[in-house]
Length: 246
Image 1 (cartoon, rainbow, N blue to C red):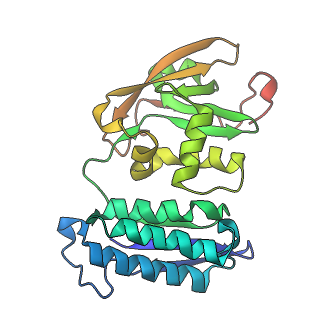
Image 2 (cartoon, helix red, strand yellow):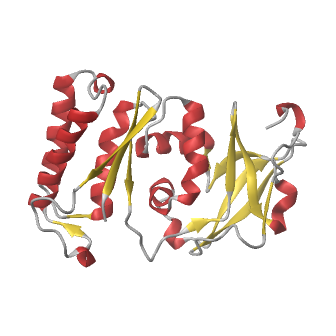
């Protein structure tokens, strides 16, 4: 596994830096264990902080200044002292540290794959003031274009708040876009919907283009190609009620 820090410079040039978080200094080549010792995780987190400071165009403003930045980094280091962390937990720790940046251009990507990855058979599409259903199992194709109200009893607003703690965005539309993409990232999907591994489906409340509010079931699957068969999507352009072309 490696972790990759990505951010945009001057909104034109994207810069990618591989964090040798599991290769430097600590001799962590026994990746089958998928665990970092307390000492190793602290060392690698310090490497990450140094890399962020050295390479990010403005690493401090989102935190309220350099002093606060280092205070928050110190608090994360103290947490890392409390136990050994799995690679996914370490990845999530770094993601949570990046949240205050809110620049929308800085993210951490992990190459770790897990056998227990879960997906939901759903595509969402952001619009100006919400999200619509862009794809779902063909058996429910008549609900394409409906507005999302909630998933598993969690309102769209609450899902956005959760998403904002997982990965940063510049504005609400950016958060909608993150939600639309999360279905392709099982690690983040599990953070957004923590009980996904114990579910066979999720209840999703929607409002149809005709204004009817109803609930449908969205299957949970371990098939990474969940959208390849028995799945329907909106045309590239669809005119839905007063939302216009989307």
